Length: 518
Image (cartoon, rainbow, N blue to C red; front, top):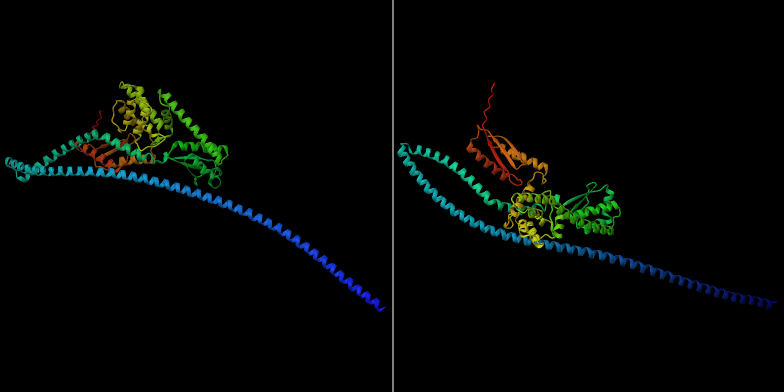
């Protein structure tokens, strides 16, 4: 019995031990399997993370390279602008040096003139001393003859000499003024024309700005584009600066070349109407518009020559004539001015028995130097003459073009005709615009200036301010004073006022006697 119990207990122990080891082995196998699955899953996660890290690195690398490229582009643009500024500075320095040389030359001429004047003043002083001596002798002789005292004779002589000197002085002044007009007119014209060419016409606002009207600010935003891409593309394609500010329903196109401004205006209009505004479309429309404008310029030139009856003109000259439509001088359209000058030249040449066709040809081409594609440092008259010679125009026509501002010597009778007709076209009332307020103020200033003189009754500014009529009282001003008064008014206007051309001062003195027969 005991043995059986012991055997049973031993069996149980052996079964328990075997069961324990069996369960333990199963648990170990399960744990091993779980560890392997965890390792495999970890490897997958590791590979995914590595792939994500590589992708993120590549994206960051691409963004960095893009940013570096943009910065390099901006740096290159800055270097280009700096180079342009340096080139402009060098050009300005050269111009300043040239002007300094010219100034030194003029200073030396002035020194020579000053020395000459000092010598003449010395001679005048000597002559004055001799004259005083002769006056004393004459006074003593007169006193001895007339029985007058020296003081009385001196007073009489001084009064007589004063009146005589005043009359002779006015006659001398008038003579010198006429002589100065004859000798100085050409030089004055040349200086004035050079000044206008180099300064005034290049800086006028009306010749450098075009206003483009839009319907709403929404269109303005589309023209600007995202981050300004569209407007930069427009500026790069047209060469015109586009100014977008707070001005409602308007965009300003700024540039000195009117053809470029016209291309920009037409292209902008087409883009706004079309509605598709992006850089590629902008370049396409600008190229198409530029071609259309060039064709229109040639067509205008051909139509102008046909209207005027001018034949055999070189195609390049025809193109330049058409380009005149987009140029202006003091608000006067250059093509209209050239047509007027051509017709006037033909009429004047016919009256003088000259060839009207040649005169008309010279009149049409006289300002051709204002519209070349390049802008060399030459007056427009010389440049126009060179262009005419280049395209095989007649020598007398070329000379008329070059001499219409006295840049070269006149060698043909066509030259003075072109010069006169050019002045007539520009002087026509209303041909050249002037600000109304400034015009009215100038006329009032003219009249008020003349009214400030004693004896002046009424003043009238006529001929668009080119003539001033001054009426004086016959009882207040005598005939001798009239000449002095006109001279004084002219000098004061010249010193104190700014005006185009010249102002003619006419002083009128009259006596009226009115009676009535009853």
